[in-house]
Amino acid sequence: MNLRSQNVVAAVAVAAVVVGLGLAACSGPSPSSGPAPAAAPASAGSDHQHAAGGPVGSGAPGGTVVVHAADELRATLTQLVPKFEEAFPGVRVAVEYGRGSEHAGHILAGAPVDVFVSADAVATTQVTAGHARGEPAVVARDPIVIAVAPSAGIAGLADLPGRRVALCAETTPCGRVSRAALTAAAVDVRPVSVDPDPATALTRVRSGAADAALVYRTDVVASGNDLRALDFSQALLIADQYTAIKVSTGPNTVGADAFVAFLGSALARHIFADAGLSPT
Image 1: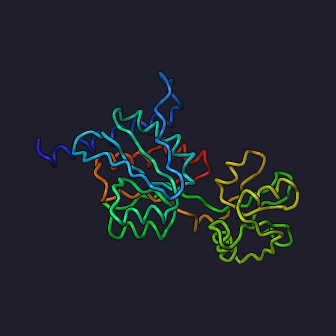
Image 2 (image 1 turned 90 degrees about the vertical axis):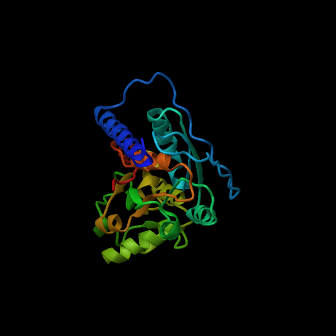
C-alpha cells in the first residue's frame, strides 16, 4: 500500500472513531472497565519542556501527540484527553498549558508541537501564518455573560443601567471583551467596582455588594450553581474563540489530525458545554 492510500485508511479510521464517540455521547455514558490514563502533567511557569514523540508515519494514530493549550482549558482537556486515549489505544497525549503568546513563541522557534489550542487571536494568527497544516478549526467559544443571583430581578442588558455592576479591569481579557460588548449594545454601565479577575467580581455578587457582574460564562459555571449566567447577543458575536491548529513543526501528523477531529466530535462538544463553552 502506498503512502497516499495509507493516509486515506488512517483518515477513514479516525472518522469512524469520531462518529462512534458522537453516538456514545448522544446515548449517554457507558460502563468503563477501569480508569483511563491521565493526561500528562503541565510544566510549571515558562519553563517549557517539549515531549517530542519522534516521527510517526501514516496509518492508525499512535505515539505521543504533543499539545500546547490555553491554561483556561486545563479542566476540560483533563476530561477529554483520557477519552481520546481510550478511543485510540497506544496513543499518549502530552499537554502543556500556558499563555498563548508563550506557546506561539516556542512554535515559531521550531518546537516540535503537534497541536496548538488557544483563544489568543494574536498567537493563533502568528502560528497559522507560517506553521499550520490545513485550516485551523474553531472548537469552542467562551462568551461574556451577565452573572446574577436568581433573586436579582435582572433579565438582561436593559436592566443593567442604574444597577450595581462589577466589571473586570480593562487590562484583563474579561474586562476588554466586557466593555466591547457593552459598547456594541450601546448600554452605559457605571461599575460599582473594577476587579482584577472574574472570581473577585463574582464574589461581590454573592456577597450582595454588586447586583451583577460581567464575566466569562465558564467563570460562572466553574464557580458553582448558585448564580445564573445570562447571555446577550452582542457578547455572543465577539466571544473568545478556542482554535485548534495542526502545527507543521510537530512530527505526529496522524495523531494531530485525529486529536483535532476528536475536539470537534459530539462527545467533545458535550464536555465543552458542561464547562460553559458554546458550540462552534
